[in-house]
Each structure stands twice: as structure tokens, then as C-alpha cells.
Length: 308
Image 1 (cartoon, rainbow, N blue to C red):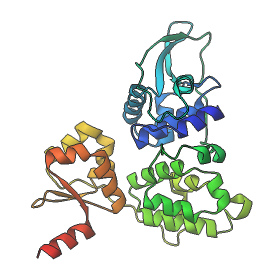
Image 2 (cartoon, rainbow, N blue to C red; image 1 turned 90 degrees about the horizontal axis):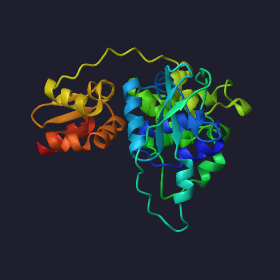
Image 3 (cartoon, rainbow, N blue to C red; image 1 turned 180 degrees about the vertical axis):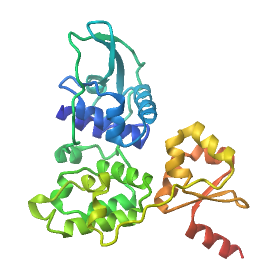
Image 4 (spheres, rainbow, N blue to C red; image 1 turned 45 degrees about the vertical axis):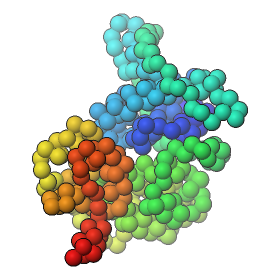
């Protein structure tokens, strides 16, 4: 792991939240020269998304000039996992004091690297945080927008737990939890209960995002959350298909299928404000083209009540 690479990755503005999470994972895998070579399934497991989503994120990062994808072969000529060279040197060379203009993305170059012996992918179990580098991050280039729900979870954690996480990691972990069908308010309650218990008190306080990953917070609630039935979008099939074409099937399953469809007003009714914000951000172009609105049940009821 390269501490410099991890600090650099956290300070970058990535094309999307998923791309930012992939970039942070790559930095955690990277060696001293900023080169990492994890397999796609390993990255997908870390970020908790599909292989195809990771591949799209890597292409977007390469397009923005944040990394170079290097195809690699073994000594016997066989292919192995790609290498990913983070643009650490380029960023340092192009940075100039007082220059707030980001450098233009460089052209992506694909090269071949021959290995002397087969290499196993490094096994990394966590994403350690660097509090000092986080505080030094430029205020004009926030890496991830911390939602009100994620900010509330962050504030509920004790100081030591916050030192063992970053706000970026909390935002990504909460996003994945909502994608699994959890209510952010319930996640917050579980996190509070966990830190109020004797398990994570004092020096045993675990990083905030670690409690959200794998739903560890749920075991600290008195009543476990009932398993929800698999949601099926009740709106027009062609609308869902157009979302899949734009964002992929995993996105549709996580964010569209849980919505109700109000035909008269052409409105997607999201399950909560967190999901509404995600749809408005990632489907802004689609919503405008298809003339579709987004609201929560409370928003929709208030609007129709006022109209009546």
C-alpha cells in the first residue's frame, strides 16, 4: 500500500461516487510507484458492485486522466490481470501554485508489460484512513458530497471511530447499504446502538464505515429488519429498459425497482429522500429527456393535497 497514493486518490474529483470508490481501492492496492494490479472481481467485491460497473468506472477514470490501463502478460505469453498506473507523477508535474484550473485529461495509452513470473493479486482487507491527509484536502475540490444521512451517521460516532474512517468511506458504505434495501434512518439507529454498547466502547471503537459494511449495525438493534421481497418496477417496461441502457442493470435493481410509478404525473416515487437525491443526480439527463419527475411519497402527497 502507498500512503501517498491513498492521499492523492482521496483528493481527486472522480466522474462518480462509484468511480471514486474504485480509485480509492486502487490506491490502497498500489505500490510505491502508484501501480496496482487487482483483478476486476476483487475490486467489485471491495466496492460491492458488479464487475461491469467496475469496468465502466475504470474506463471513466482513464478517460479523465486519473489512471492508465496497462495490459499485462506473463513470461509464457499468457494474459493476466490488467495493471492500473495512477497519475501521481503527472498530477505533481502539472500542478502550479495559485492555479485552480484542473489540467486537461491526457490521452489514455495502453501498453504491454511482461512479467518474469505469475503474480498473485494482493489480498487487502480494509481501506485505512489517513486523517492528516483528509484534513489537508483542498476545500475547493471535495471528493464526495456527504449526504445529510451520512453526515448524521458520521456525527453520531465517537472521535476515535471517526479517526479510523473517512467521510468518503462512510458515504460509499451508506450508498451500498441503501442499494441493499436498508433505510438510512435505521442504519443510523444501528450505528448509535453499536457505539453505545460495550463492544465498541473506548479504544475498541471500530471505524464508522466498517459498521455499515456487511450490515454489522443490524445486530445491535432490538428487532432485526424483516427481509424485504424483491421489488419489481410497476411502471412502463420501456422506461426501465432505457435506464438499464444508460446506467446498467445493477443500478436499475438498486434504485428503480423500489420506486412506485405515478402515471398521471409521470413521477417516480422513491422510497426515501436519499434514493430521490441519487436518482436526480445520476439520471438528470434521462429525467429531462423522458419528462419524468422524482419525488418521495411525502412530497407527492403534499403536492397533490395542495393542488386539490
